Image 1 (cartoon, rainbow, N blue to C red):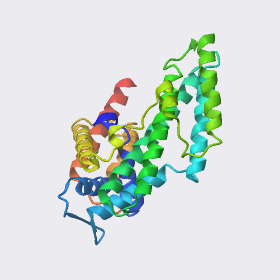
Image 2 (image 1 turned 90 degrees about the vertical axis):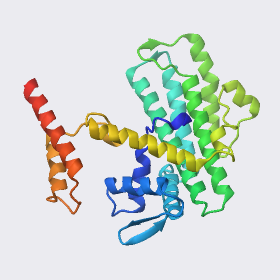
Image 3 (image 1 turned 90 degrees about the horizontal axis):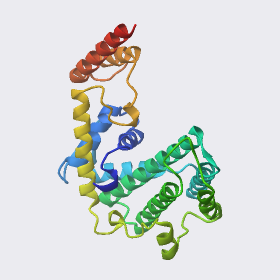
Image 4 (image 1 turned 135 degrees about the vertical axis):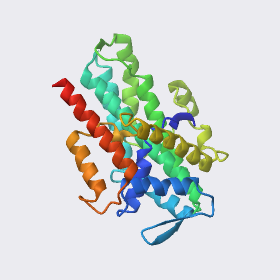
Length: 296
């Protein structure tokens, strides 16, 4: 699976389905995506009294993911990402790495990793759908993915993954030209290009990444990723304390669990009763309440 094998940002795919079909809730989004990815090629997905082919589903998801990484325009998004990168380089190399500096670094790497995953998943979905037949769109997505990988490499190569430490003078001097380089990149469009020598010297060479070549099988990638995610979700149903995604990292409070259970019972919406999920939440709610009693 390479760099995305942990499925860290897989929830963005579910979110994209919800965005494409506002009437669909999170659980149904999971079902739609699972059927679109894993069903045979001629399979159609049926919901809300409509029928969609796999190509239509993939195209809609790909367009939603592609748009989710653009703040206003591609140029403005590029400018903002490079500006944030310069701030991280500056604060992580100005003499002392504080907790605030380190959090800024971690947040930036998390944001850009999420963007990278979303753009790569968009590329995969659009390639599988192949409705656009527009190589320019695919090339633009690849270019943006490469740019994100390069910027993330720069942050990781020229900042320490440590906190509460003093930065020596030689590290400060080493980071100065990187800071100036990033500042100069802000004046360029997102379609700028490092020279081969620059990429090698900076150790940021991604021009020939295998997953961006024409021989890469994006459909197989989607299927493998979906299967890995399903394994994680099965483990959650067996052990509710294990998280699936960033959307589900925090445990529900007893009050929130009660609301969820009430919703599943049909008293707080139109959602169809889900017996298995009801039993899982009910068990988790009782466990949390018991833990709080023991603590008190």
